[in-house]
Length: 343
Image 1 (cartoon, rainbow, N blue to C red):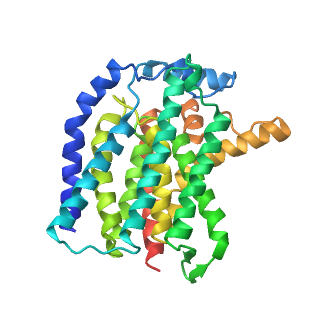
Image 2: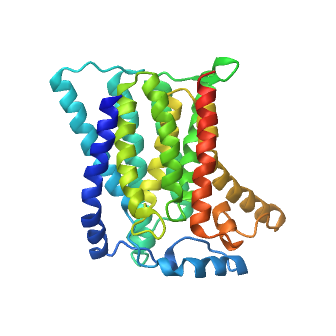
Image 3: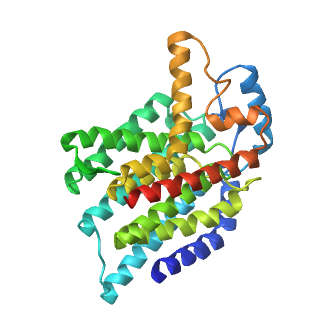
């Protein structure tokens, strides 16, 4: 465990030293928040107009913290495994190490590239070459989810879910569409959650801590090392992302982080715990889906505005209050999820 704690600290220091120069770089290239293309809401209602007024002061905040975290994790993780192989340190893993690395790297980087393209298309909408419609974005997100779940099913041979109190259950081929839906929902759900300062990153940090404990108890060196480095970089980012934020994650980070969290939960075989620990992300996208279907089918609103954190915001909750209580809720859900993994 001392190795993983050391990696977390080193990742935190490395990312911290890089953040201020990176923020200045984002200012120079004008990769910053624009209220007219923010994607907060496309509706013209009293609630949406109020939401835009509440967020108008955030114009000009740099977007792209996810890119730095991804780069830091990729470089440090590669360097650590190179050093481990050279030193002859014994590593353990649930699956063949190369196959495990392929799944993690594909998810972490491919979803990030899709998110980066989406960020650029929003910030520089005048370029037709960079246009990415919402329908195309979700289609590509689904395709990437299919590929990630295929790697889990065919390369790692995963098809089992562990049900607390009942034990493992082999789903067979049903595992493939189920894992695809889970990865898609977590990726999109994280994207929907990333709308307030410190909200999504803080909820993710708490959930990752829970899966860090699970990976350490299963003696999976690959996952434990990766999560350690990810936690350190995420903690450094949070220092600059809490209210009032000096940098935002961007879709490059949000799409990647949600999908990777789901893949980690699936690799550890703790799907029920994953759903509980990450239920805040699922509630966020679930509220938006219910609203969308209600408007399409019945032309009626279930909520004044979605996702849930925006509803609370226009109801009068201060932004830090929503964020802090979301963190506390996720702490309790993570404790419940960890308890279920021990049954």
